[in-house]
Image 1 (cartoon, helix red, strand yellow):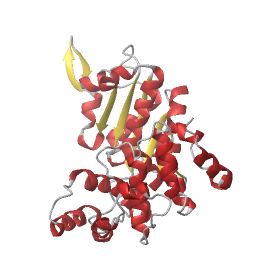
Image 2 (cartoon, helix red, strand yellow; image 1 turned 180 degrees about the vertical axis):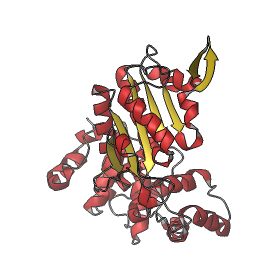
Image 3 (cartoon, helix red, strand yellow; image 1 turned 135 degrees about the horizontal axis):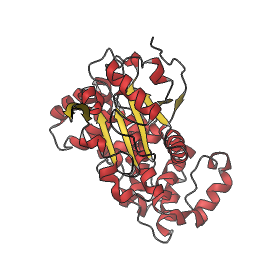
Length: 360
């Protein structure tokens, strides 16, 4: 008998990372199953948790060898249970070396089982036993090895099936929610994602993930990231649009390309900084997002003077733009919290300051 989890309890990326990491640090034998829409960051989450655990326990220098991902849908169960052979008249099982490297005595590690919900019953039955007993057909896992699993949801019609009931019962289940804030926080650290791309997702967050199983092409965090990082910006406009539509869908491509084409209306940042107290604020909302994001990304400030000058311009925007600018620049320049401009802002915006991360 199979069971399907119907509870609509979701977590954003940041909270899920915190929860999974803390539990696995304290209880290595706990096993999490991360589900969610295709392209919403499930694999990134499991890998990120693995790196955080490695860093916390001091074996991050071994990451390459001790953090492994297995795409279950690409394997037969015999790859993990081991090919049989006869030794001295007895059958022994010979598992793949990539899995055997996690046997007892080898030390800590993290195994990511990708596409668990897309694997067949034999795979699910095998891993249900491993998760329960912490051993395979031929060896025990090291007690410090963690297991994280991922999979699409059944309703997304992406090849997933309901997990076998006994396997499901042995897992902690987390459904990952698509979040514009989480994607932006991640994208801020990616050198290949431009401020214009960031500003577009902030401007139209509802387009970040529009997954519909009835559509051939969908906008997801993964597809936007691929578009922003893999398609040359200098493609002829008509070609770029068709390539974009083939990756994020027609609506997403139309709106993204429209904003790209308006970038010549974005104020020159040097001109803004020369006349920060009275430079006109752009009329178009998308250009406002792009302008503020661009200023935050290009601020070079070791003393706070550059921020004070920018702030003469930024402080004339609605509070949501001020909050966005501060959130970006404080990541690189936490000392800005000591400037007069920031202190004045905190006094007049205490109602939203509670949501601003402390970078001290």
